[in-house]
Length: 266
Ligand code: KIV
Image 1 (cartoon, protein in one colour):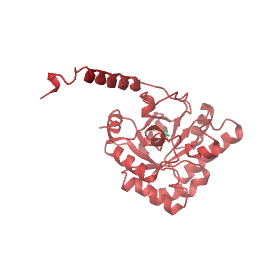
Image 2 (cartoon, protein in one colour):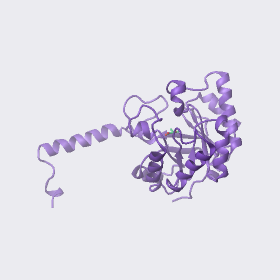
Image 3 (spheres, protein in one colour):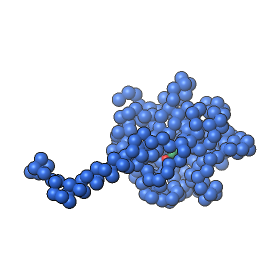
Image 4 (cartoon, helix red, strand yellow):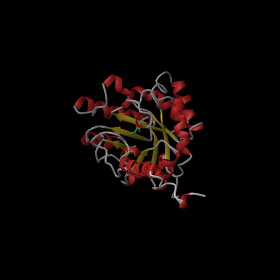
């Protein structure tokens, strides 16, 4: 294992102009494989609600579920920085409840940082979590937990006023003490502006090439996810077809009595 990734490592990478890599992971086995590749950040994202649990958005995911998945992933991660994603309603009620829930990610989920969606409006909560010595990753641009307010998943920051708001949000997160900022679904030119406006690393998803790093969902890059993927997703494998072929072969061999053969029997 090369040395453990921390928020300091990520800041050093930005200063050195080295790209940061990150993936969303939900389980122990995948975490082991991803960690062995030397990925910098493993995020246990609330996208688990859509990818693994079949919900149409992330709003139904609970703190209990997130702590459970984070703990599973923690057992597979040795080198990467492990970030737990605070779900809807876990940081919306009060500063006190927010800090308590962030603490659960560390004490029960063994996370090394938490991620929250939002900008200026969550500054007090970010400050309080950081004051409790828990590193925070921000998240601006498209915030999937805003799905009910914005009517789905849409590119953000397309006009000057909304682009300026995203830049203000990123700056205020930096002031509040985040160690990095996820920039989701914004035009590449705006991501460049944000990346130049803050000293902390930006990690893009659907935000073009100018971010300091990139994050995608592991299931998406492996081609496991059903249906048409968003434009920014690049599939590096077609695991859905690979799995279907393997399962089909198993089924066929069982049905015709070819499995188990002598080699696979006692
Ligand atoms: O939930 C998630 O997986 C995320 C990333 C894609 C940034 O928030």
